[in-house]
Image (cartoon, rainbow, N blue to C red; front, side, top):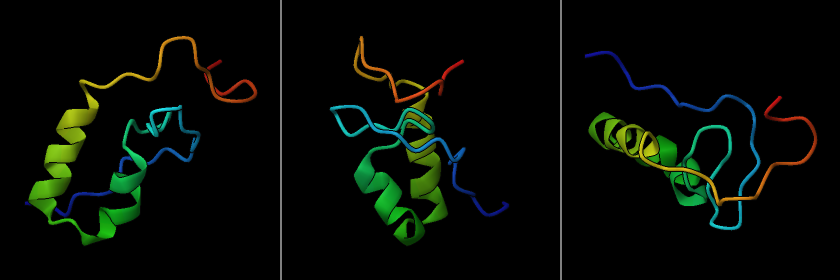
Amino acid sequence: MPEVHSPCIKQCFRDSNDLCFGCRRTGEEIGNWSKYSDEEKRAIIEKTYQRSNVSGETPPGNFLS
């Protein structure tokens, strides 16, 4: 199976729950990404599909437009 690459899209702004608006990973997941096994990385990516940022919070600028 191919190596699991980071889901980072270079839009790194986090909400008040420490969840990135770009990739939906937590700060801990972002910081430890290189330490995780490919199986752990796949599990994290699966979790990101269920996550959403804090309602009413938006990143600075025109990030989402």
